[in-house]
Length: 367
Image 1: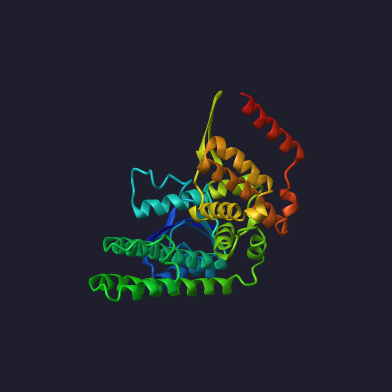
Image 2: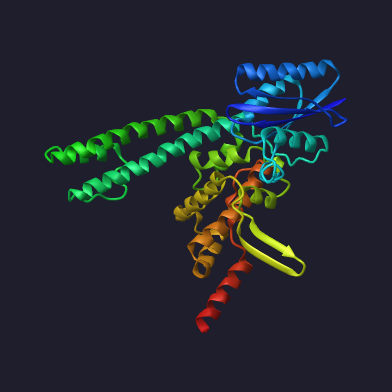
């Protein structure tokens, strides 16, 4: 016998609805999201197991879904993580209660009609959390530095954009304000905070480096010119398992770099990229593009750079960077899929393409 269990999970409690094979509600209840509540729920699942039921649990993807799954998985039950973006039955329901939502999940689970979402590995989750913490600190640093620039400018002291990056330079600025009175008192707490947050960012980067020290995917990604730890880590964390994606197009769709398309009857509309995937992954691909563009000595002869330069003249910088990020997405997919490092020889431009581009330029000049 099968027991389909729908769980409406929240921050402080979760509501449960248990349906048997005859679609009768065997039990429903509310449990707190603490050790006592989880133990009471798992004890109930063990009770169903002793009565001969095979339990299956459906829960929506939320911030504490992983912790919930870690508690339930001990019972040996099958767990389905529901993709809330594709399952609109709960959000658009006229009767919106926790009990009704839990029953809806149980009913669709019983019919095997739930769109699933895959939880990443624990290592990928740890990397994501570290990157998120680092991102929060870096944003705080940028805000503080902008405040310092503004304060100094108010006292008639002009500073350059990257002048506050160096601790030595920050100390030089602070020493130069020693005889400025109020200016020194206003700027000193901000500079001290910048020093403290900068050291915390460095500590997070050291922890991240230790976690991925023997990670093969990180090592492969770092063979791409312009890619370092901070760029490779989000690609590794938000890709998790490259074998989940059947093709490079599927991988691009996951990253939100696939173009939006609407096809109805004989009408086809194409739009901008969907931006449906993790924003950190898209940002990482854009950062790889910027890294390649900075390393002109190594990458200037790559066909991907030459295509970018040609497209930039007609489409502008923004669209050209996104188009190049899509190509980088395909390259990363091939590297991770086949487990081979970046091969610069494959970046050599096709002679036919060079001839065509030269002919196109001559044609434009002739016009």
